Length: 165
Ligand SMILES: CC(C)(COP(=O)(O)OP(=O)(O)OC[C@H]1O[C@@H](n2cnc3c(N)ncnc32)[C@H](O)[C@@H]1OP(=O)(O)O)[C@@H](O)C(=O)NCCC(=O)NCCS
Image 1 (tube, helix red, strand yellow):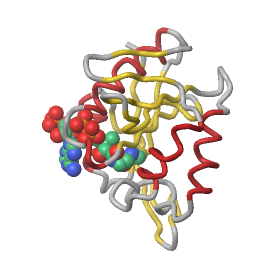
Image 2 (spheres, protein in one colour):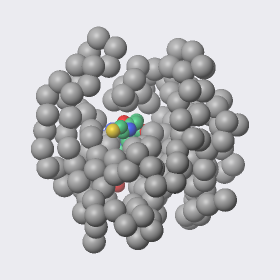
Image 3 (cartoon, rainbow, N blue to C red):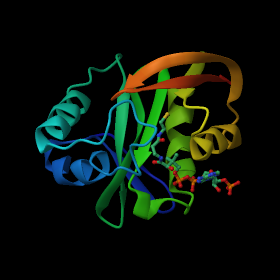
Image 4 (cartoon, helix red, strand yellow):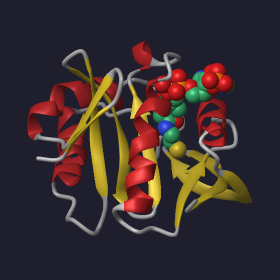
């Protein structure tokens, strides 16, 4: 079972036992304000989402549950290579956990999976994610308008890329 330990965190594969923790995140309006779906109102939506994370095939992607002090606080990784994704419970924001979790996952993407580049698609209003990705070395490569229809709201995208090395 693949696990990555950092100073404060454990990164591991998802199981369906993570459902309650992820429903708490995916039903949270603050956590999902820039997410690709509105907050989950039904735990079945979170179950389907988590099942698709559990079912990721090797070579297709690699997503990690992030644990802090024995509790699942978020996820980082690739639902599908080469696009990075991450979400944490708002009670854990601002402690550097996202950066700490992403660093080894990005290193692994280049060194183990041999990616030439990692990509990210971020809402221009998502200041926390833009700051986080800039700190990790991502560079903006373009902007697109009306890329995501979330509920009844059109959202735009900033495209970012981190090259190997
Ligand atoms: C983006 C997210 C993962 C950041 O998590 P986090 O653990 O708070 O991030 P970190 O503590 O590692 O912070 C990384 C940097 O971003 C900065 N940052 C955090 N929140 C910020 C905000 N609201 N505005 C501006 N910068 C912010 C931090 O200050 C830090 O930079 P610094 O070291 O120069 O101070 C978290 O806010 C989240 O889960 N958001 C919702 C999900 C989401 O938007 N995912 C991305 C979809 S594309």
